[in-house]
Image: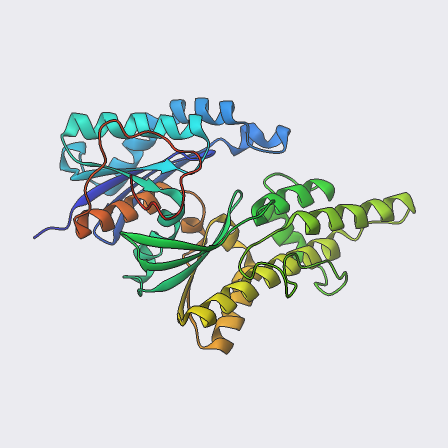
Amino acid sequence: MTEPLVVGFETSCDETGVGVVRGQTLLADALATSVGEHERFGGVVPEIASRAHLEAMIPTVHRALAGAGVAASDVDAVAVTAGPGLTGALLVGLAAAKAYALALDVPLYGVNHLAAHVAVDELQHGRLAEPSLALLVSGGHSSLLLVPDLSREVTSLGRTVDDAAGEAFDKVARVLGLPFPGGPPIDRAAREGDPTAIGFPRGLTGPRDAPYDFSFSGLKTAVARWVEARQRAGEPVPVADVAASFQEAVADVLTAKAVRACRDHGVDHLVLGGGVAANSRLRALAEERCAAAGIVLRVPRPGLCTDNGAMVAALGSRLVEAGVEPSAPELGADSSLPIDVVSR
């Protein structure tokens, strides 16, 4: 029996993504981004993102179907991000997905954005070991998840208390005069710097702190104060050293907590996902620490780590395969959809 052909819609933030998946095989992943329109504001502006999704949606769908070599009539199911994310942006994707599902008379699956970041790894590395542990690191989320069954059961072990890692990258980049979004520029600058040059703090790593939660607000503030002190003293700011030391602090906390969670829960497979998972130091340190702990590390290629339609289609394919009930026509957006709700 032919595996179902699933189209996935992703519009949770500033990327309009449409992916086409058959089973665990990625056929196409079309993307349109409005990041350039947000750059002058130093962050994503929800209204601008929503309008950009409206303009990009139909052309992106056409590119995805053409790239996959299929017609809309070939589609067996539609999946769409229902949350978490920016409400206005989510509503654009939901409206488009509902329209296609209704016109094609196929089931609709509203999926969790974070669970989709886990599912996308299956497109590169095959079926996920269950249980697995997932470390998801993006602009709005830093999460540790226990995944006993990706289609039905995902449990939060730890989450962001204030600033997520991606937010901290953006804010530190601004302090250093680097472009938005801050992740890639800091990664590039750090290659020329010394990660041990400055001893920036590691948040929530004390014996009384929550073992799996994350806080990068204090780290961001420490970087800003260190840079301001140099500037007040009339001394040059060693951008490369600051970038490398900041990046090391982030990677150190994320990987240490992920390995600890694997040990505590008896899990020997770790998936690293989300936009910040494209960071070279985070990937390298995760490989080093997982190898030492006997943990199998799975990291999707960088293009699959950032928000994309392929991840939504991948999770949708899993739901179809597992016989999960499709979403109701009145499916709505939930900007704070909890991780334990894989589909709605």
